[in-house]
View (cartoon, rainbow, N blue to C red):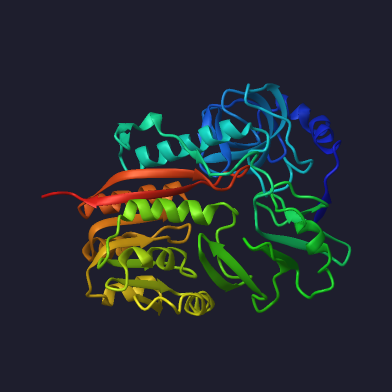
Amino acid sequence: MVQKWQPHMKAARIRLTTESLLDDQIHEGAVIELRIERVANGGFCIARHNGQAVFVRHSLPGELVRAEVTEINKRFLRADVVEVLEPSAARVTPKCSYAGVCGGCDWQHSSLEYQRELKAQVVIEQMGHLAGLTELNGKPIEEFLVDALPGETDGLGWRTRNRFSKIGDIGIGMKMARSHSVVEIDHCEIAVPGSIDLALSALHLSGDEVSTAMSSTDQHVVVDKRGGPWLEEQVFNRRWRIHAGSFWQVHKNAPEAFVNTVREFASLQPGDSLLDLYAGSGLFAASLASDVGESGTVVAVESGVDAVRDARRSCSDLPQLELVTADVSRWITKCDELFTVVVLDPPRAGAGLNVINEISQLAQKAIIYVACDPSALARDTQYLADAGWALQKIVAYDAFPMTSHVECIARFLPVQQ
C-alpha cells in the first residue's frame, strides 16, 4: 500500500472516528481521549485508558490528546495522536510536512532541547529499572542529561546513510511507523542535502529500495548491489577507504565525538593492549592504535567480511593492529589473552550474558561499552555488575535528532575486592 500524505488527511480521520469516543468497546480505529503521563523507550509516550497502558505516538508528556487506536494487545494498546486538546509548552510545528505519517522521525513535534530531555528520561528509566542504579556520574540519576553532538545546530540535515522505498519508476517513499505501507516523499529534513534527488536518479536500478551514502569527504553516491562504490571517510587525520554499504556512523559529526569519548575513557598508554569487539571497519581500533604505540597491541574482531576487508585496506600502516574476521560470541570463548581495555560496540540487541561474562574475564583495567539502545545497555550493565564490574561514567549523545534513538558510551571499572 502506498499512501501519499496530504495535509487534510488527519482532519478527515478525526471526522471519521470521533463518534467512537462514545463507544466503550475498544477496537482498532477507535479514538480515545488520553492524558499523557511520561515518555517510553522507542518514540512513544505512555497514557492509560481504563487502567490499561497505551503507547501513544506523536504526543508529549502532560498533553491531553485524542488518539486513534492502531493496535490492540492483551497487555497494552498502541495509538496515534489525531488531535491535541492541551499541548505541551515544548510542542512545535514540525519542519517536515510528512511528520506524523512517515516512520523516519519520532519527535519532530518537540523542540530539540526537549527531545534531549525525553531521551535522558528514557536512559534514566532504563538504567534505574533494569540496572537498579540510583546514581549516574556521582549524581542522583534524575539529574542525568543527554548532550548534543559537537557542531549540532537544528537537528536537521545530518543523516548521511539513507534507504528509500521505490514506488515503481515514478517516485520514492519511506515506510510508516510499524508498517510496511509506504508514504511517497519529495523531501526529507534529516537527510543530508541532495539525498532525495540522488535516490530519484536511481529509480531505473533493480530492486525495491534505493540506498544513498555521503562520506565525510563529500562523496555522495547510490549504493549498488555489491555494497559499493568506494567512499573515503576521514576521522581526524586518518582516512578509511570503505564500501558505501559498510556500516559507518550515520550522523556526520558522530565519529570524531565517539572516538574522543572512547579515547578519554580508555586512557591507554604506550605498551597497553586493546580488544575492540564488533569493530566494524575499525573506527575505534585504528583511532586508538596510536595511543598504545608500536609496543602495544590492538585486536579488532568483526564478523562482517567486507567490513574487515575495508579495515585491512585502510589500516595496513598499523603493525600493532590485528584484524580478526569472526563471530564475537564464538571467538571470545576461545580467547585466552588478557587486555588492558576492552571496547565493545554491539548491535542494538546488546552483547548479552555470555559475551559479557567472557569480557569480564579478559579486561584488566576498563571496559568501554558503546550502545545505541539504553535498554540493552542497562541489561548488560546488570550483567557486568554481577561479574564484578561497576559503571563509573556514562555519556549520552543525541546522535539521531528527531528520532527516539540515543547513543550512550559507558566506562566500567573492576570492583575492588
